[in-house]
Length: 273
Image (cartoon, rainbow, N blue to C red):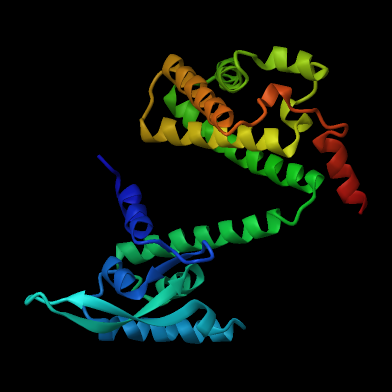
């Protein structure tokens, strides 16, 4: 059974469209329905407030609120044209910020579009980074996601440091074709004290970030209980990520080159700058 958060997320996701440039947009009539506004006249007042907020933020409302017509079916097999608006992700964000905060779906929408807008900003910024800055960015993401992974794994029964080391090793074995932390160290020529994640390129880090986020999500979603089950889940997710890389004709993580500089060295360079 879907939980409330997943159900609410699906409401926004299911009405999402793509324009000719591959950008997400929503129709105002659909958003009206999702946000539980029964009258268009009441909802359009919220849209107008969002347009003002858009202009006040230095953006053109025309870039985010595009008036369009939509044909709707009538009971007698006829149709009529009604006004509608194509809304960008940012426009939706502004609308939910100005909508009735007493509605639970509005509160969720505020979080949903804030996160989605932030993801877009990060992606646009990420594409402009060089390899070293990409490594630093993904490594920092991994630090945060691993914290959450520790919390979820602990609820599943992975309690001690030794338990977590075994749990983490299973994730590596799944992703690296049976290689555990010790074997990865040897393959990369690392010292025992070196952190594996600090000696990966951006592509390898991204694969491990995907492994961590998907394991966290699956442990939480499936309500996994028991160390053995948690370890198996981490291994299985690692295997699936590896299979995805293989299907995309990508290079297996153990075959990717080891950068000459560690994350620690890159951080020191950035501090000097």
